[in-house]
Length: 246
Length: 182
Figure 1: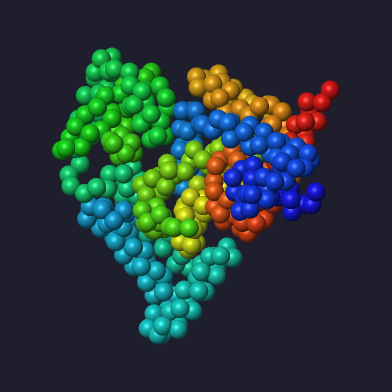
Figure 2 (figure 1 turned 90 degrees about the horizontal axis):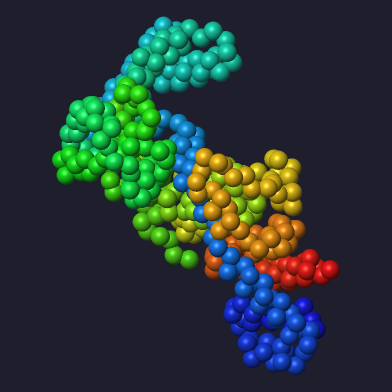
């Protein structure tokens, strides 16, 4: 039996063959071909009957936590972000540009045309890159850092998903209410638990559902947490964290 | 191969840093990526690490997706490459599979491990296959991907996939037969 025949028989076994009559005749007339056919059929049967591995709830939560951690803070507001979040980015950008302009003025490179400015920027960048003291660079860094809190805050809000426009629900009041009624909260249903897992939160949580301005949220708290601990709001139905309070 | 319009659009949003779009993409493919990684690496913890690395790569390289294949195909290609990167880094072959660890704080762990298990003789035989053969068997027979998609994931012609698949199965049959021979 040739290798070509083996391929024909293997293709017959999994239904991908193009010359079925020839393959069938080989199986019927050649004992080696029949053995090959049976072996292939057995292996296909064993493999295709194997169950698909699934992640456990904890594994899935760990995956989401690790991926979110690996991505770091978000840097760009979503297209639907409210204007004040966008303005935060614009303001941060303006501060950085203003700072850079100040650097160039300090090192006497403004007014020298685009080439000079470009050279100065490159030189400053090179100094910064080599670790040599770069006059004016700390100023930029300070400005950037000064702008960072608003940028980070905006990014954080976006990362938490509060970027749908419109007014925010009264998260603080809802969180306070949830904390004060912790002992009355029901354990999550299977559906809620799945949603919480998808949001990357721990399995053991206390939960309730609230509706604000037509949007439903899960209010999630660690079951054994102190009253000061964070209350997390998970928006339904897409199970994404939109706000953390506390 | 047709490009999934909605998924391609989501990936385009990922390029802009849209985390919600990224999570949608991740949700659609995380189970299969984990499954592929577990079949290749043979260990849940390493499979979870590889799944995590796969999606971080998806986020960072979303810009490189050209739309010539389905988003899923592109992601599975990253997953397979990530698994082999991990194997190379640890210098550990799948034949040295670690025993599955059951986390006592994870109530579903034991059941998940048991329900996902191949028959031991098949798993053992699968681990002895060379990566070329194992990849096609995992993607085609275990994950059920059509041959043209397997070819795209691995970047080889369909004929090569068929050939490797047939030979991979043949080797599995021989090795399982040998294991069963006293």
